[in-house]
View (cartoon, rainbow, N blue to C red):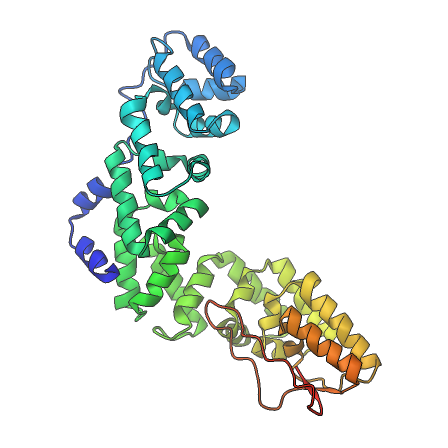
Length: 397
């Protein structure tokens, strides 16, 4: 279904796509918007009725058409209040699109809220969606809103996933759907990424697929520079991670790792194995590197080849686990200086179980000779290792 939908829209003329998907209803045009004969009246009305500050009311009033009476604005106010939108939430919406005050409630506003309810959103869901993304009700026609909802429902594969994304972030409804079509075709045709993997990303992160195609191609160029072959299992995961990391931040992190003696090639190796550490701030990455090198005693090159700890919290995971390791060493229960990254990666319950076994049984800790953690599989976390058998002669972590 996803492939047929994308291919079908790919053959629509650009002007038709624009007409179908991007008719959002213009704000008051320059030719049709004339200043109110009494701007002070509008400002006072916005201050007294909606609670705007005088400055903000003045800015909003300048974007409103000629208002002869407050009949429509009062009706709009009453409707929004009946939907649970008032105070700061309503001011946010009106500051984004002041022209809503002149809309007809029965023909412009009520049908859109009805569509959102019929799609399965609760009253609280609708309030949150409209409050955070008022453009959802900004389309000139409620039919446009319905068409966009149905189209994205097809892309996501289910209404449940559509609603999940609407509750989380509804702005994707206002994206350029022509870009979505072109980007999906590009990822499948030129990058060799299977449809089901592209669909997986869209379902969980629709923002990834909506940028200008030139921006996506620039992202692909960056991924190519890291050395990941197109079509490989990690390629889409690398693209997704880089989508959330600016080029400037990436370069700053390369420079930081160079300062620890790692080459650009070493850095690329780390990214290939565990790319999500790029989401850390440069300062947080610096602190983790310093801790692992100076306190734990891991060589920089070993970190590059086992970078998973860089994706963990320094305060919540790395430091507490290191303190436990120091206690085990002091009791003669830690015998290894290799594969220290494994010690940090165990899940909480398994870590506690193994630590308790060490202390209770007095068994020396040695690294597993055969079990090693694979590179972080996209996009799920590293699988937990099974707990050590209580009858074994050593506890493996």
